[in-house]
Length: 90
Image (tube, rainbow, N blue to C red):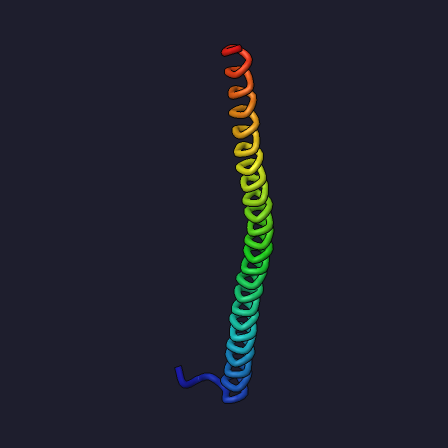
């Protein structure tokens, strides 16, 4: 077991150090990729929430205008009903 040459041990140590360096670089790159993916997901969600906010705003405006239209139509129908009642009573 002690037959190994110090030069072989040095080469083996250098190889191990290189492999550790490669593994470390791959690990750091993986972390950056994961962060990048999460940032992309957050940006996509932010855009979708913004679109949804605009849709809800438009929907609220439409509902409000329909409510006003319904109220005015109800008033008009009530007025027509009163005029018809007056005509029938004549």
